[in-house]
Image 1 (cartoon, rainbow, N blue to C red):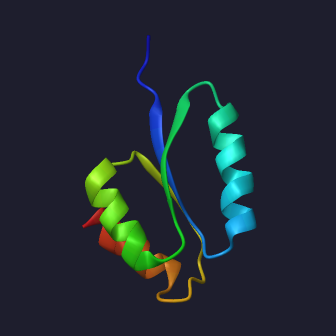
Image 2 (image 1 turned 135 degrees about the vertical axis):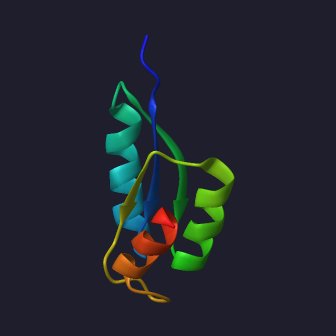
Image 3 (image 1 turned 90 degrees about the horizontal axis):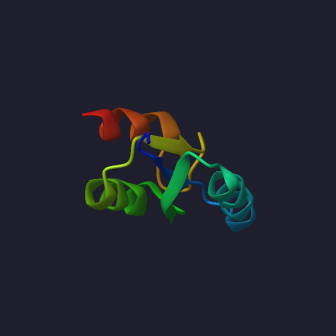
Length: 74
């Protein structure tokens, strides 16, 4: 049995987070390990959950999504 892929969702729109969460939860090989509406919360969540994948909105209210991705990779 393969390990499930741990995913976090980062988007400042709750409806988008909910839709993505439903898709991920339905995936047989994915586990949703958290959601965040801001880069600050996402960075803390990622440190706590150590996800394999982050689905990140490019335009967040408190940061640019690409900056968050670079910080998460570091």
